[in-house]
Length: 305
Image (cartoon, rainbow, N blue to C red; front, side, top):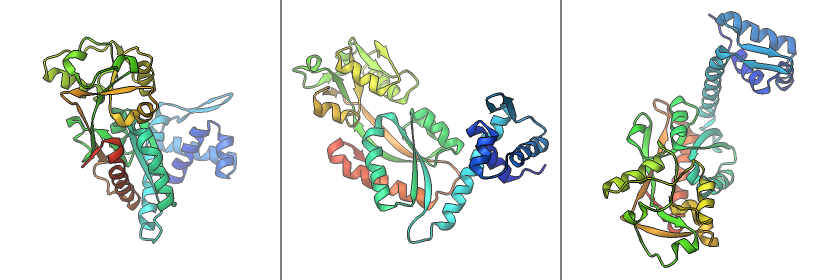
């Protein structure tokens, strides 16, 4: 079997554009030549890779498998180029970073601003998703680096401690009026708002309730941070979240936060893809992330490890 790497990389463009003509125009090659490349891949693999429609093309199941491998190859090619160029005085490279939704607003904008200022030739791609999804993408090689909620289930990744903070109960000003601290036991019968299981944010809260012998039975389960904050603002329940994720709402008075007793600490780690040597761009991103977290810590309440 002889698979041409250029053909595989061009196959990515065919799928992403959805039309061979558009992909050929983007690649600056003749459409018949690109069609022959796809045919050569199909002959080499003994499989049909594209379904053709009046509006364009889409990958078959075999085509989707090839697409996944081709994207991985493209990423490795970029990493190889980055490694070779990394010895230059002005670092050049690309890094893919996964961040949980709870930390995207607080961490991502200042991180991108700093990277653009200090390392303009390093291209940082940000992926925001739930921690479990980010972990899967990290292990599969789609990400170089990820901020993850700490979990023993993440043992396959190469992780190091990052930041932690004590979560607070959040509700409307009226709901929280006069409250200085909220015992967890008092919250058991409240209208609690939480993410669906098995979200690690949810599991952390459940574990804290179990430790005091209380059941955690939320009234509203929703995997949307903006919706959780809006529901709490409207007085439709109480959310338990890290304070850094609601700093703007607390400052504006849209939400009121109250410390929990006993406290619930949410811990995160930085994870890297196992068995992959990090490029200079990734190492620079890690260093910048840690410096930035230390600078933000006095305002966010983070404990940086």
